[in-house]
Image 1 (cartoon, helix red, strand yellow):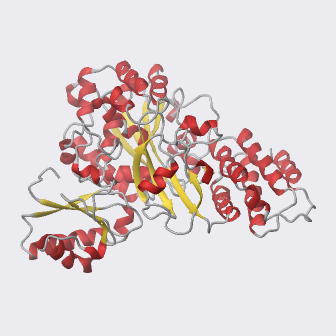
Image 2 (image 1 turned 180 degrees about the vertical axis):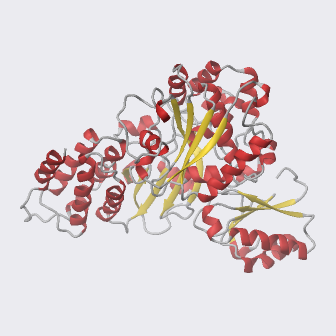
Image 3 (image 1 turned 90 degrees about the horizontal axis):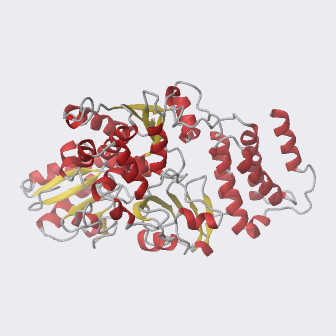
Length: 547
């Protein structure tokens, strides 16, 4: 991607586009360019996700910046003729004729200018993720060499603390503080774990980061290992992420071959290796202690805290656990500095946030925006507006996230602003819904997921998720108890306060927020004459019995 004297066709290859035939289209493009005698003038580059999703095979042209969607093998001949022989856009499959926000970063070296504010997705859609030389060519592993040669573990942790980086997996805990806890434990060996489980419906940002820039994750993990004095790291990844696994395995192998993983990295005397642990697809294993149980070969159930993983984690040893997106910020912070990073986002939460935007929008896909941007800006400036009907609600943070109404469209999407309203930012999934969606029906879908994924360890969650699902089903059929909403609120608050782990606690978020903003609609599902068998009492009796 460095030779700007020739035209380049970037084929976005990720789990979605592979199913649409991206690899076949790439082969056909190479073949057709050869037939047309254009192989020396136009190069076909395989890259990660370019941004848009659910639009088939996505192809970008550089320089120029047009995006083409749903490109098939049958389109390739005409596409080459129009774009590279006649020199005009191929209108039939043109997604964006002007340089789109999601693609504009190709015109700039965003590590330095940050034209579009990309940090985590800096290289996604820009380099071949399966070639370590391309990652090195855009500054990859510079941060690792810098810290190993010039910084002590304490200095690195202090930089991360000053940067204000907070966890991007949903909890928002200060990253530097978390690193300092693990560093402070003087029990060895220590471990670094990258949490790539990502089991929430609608959330696939971490998958696209790993598919598009696997070496950044490896570099960040190695830096984290040096900072907390660990010599072994694990990437815990769900088994469905086959392309991510393949690219991570290839990246680890390449890094080892040239001495960027293994023994005596950069001649510093520091040793670090990374292994991959494949999960079986349980949502609860995204919770860090359940993840540890799964890694050790036990049933994926959460553990009591304290002790925290920093004290007793994997194999009862001090362990640092960070989310993929959190780690992916680290190399850029160390290379560019604290002040640079704090230019983005808010004072309380600097930096950017990666979102997957789905639902009733014109341009669903992957975006990276400064923290503190509003929901309205994301929907109308980045996602192209509502695709049909009018905006009704948005769920932020995945299935366990809050449901926001139109009155919160201009609220800043950062932890502090949302917490003042009783909401959380969550992991980075935005599901946008129009006025065709029934609130009761949607809540029922969320609760059905939690019923399926509850590990059953605590009766509060095991029974509570079932009760809320049944309540939503009654509301959908307009057969709810006269005090159904009051009972739902009570059960949701009980889950929030007493469930053993964040899975059970987070079930309350969609319920309570929907009751807050859409109570009138939910009341339409209530039968005022249905007064028998008060469900809350029945639920409480079950909780006591099973406990």
